Image (cartoon, rainbow, N blue to C red):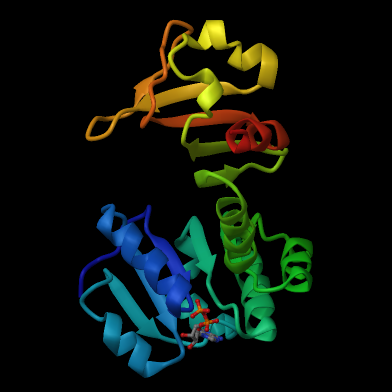
Length: 220
Ligand code: ADP
């Protein structure tokens, strides 16, 4: 078996979320130790992850045997079982794993994991649902929101700003948003400056307060 390096990541639960995450890390050259109770799941990922083992992560002894205490980063990707995810979080905390991410499928699961001291709780269904709502209701093509109500979106330019420089159009003063980048078809994004003139058919990356960004991108 391959040896596993110091900066490897433990991924516990190799369902849809954990598997995608583990394979993405490996694709980026980061070693993964994958753990799952289901032998078929383990079998399916053998050879695609640096290490993949069948074990029950709620069993502290089993995790010690796997030297989980030597890892800095772990992801708990067990959404379907609240009990297993919470118990696993307890075990990882007691083994002093420094940085723990956990997937939660409900708000109560998220709260519980936070109370145990899990540093990063992600709610993929909830977050993707909200994000998709922004794409469905308006003209945005992509939408990322940060904790403090700040958003970055990809959108088509409103007609009112076409053919003028960003300074003339008064994007910042009138809408309170910043156009970060502009892209023409078949070209890469370039950083916008006050002299940038936006043309029909281009795409914009716009940042700012989430409501302002929304108002800006949804105007005609
Ligand atoms: P997704 O919604 O991302 O597919 P699931 O919650 O359905 O995620 O999948 C969870 C995975 O975690 C399953 O493959 C399951 O076998 C595994 N799992 C559940 N409990 C444990 C446990 N105690 N230890 C290790 N793996 C577990």
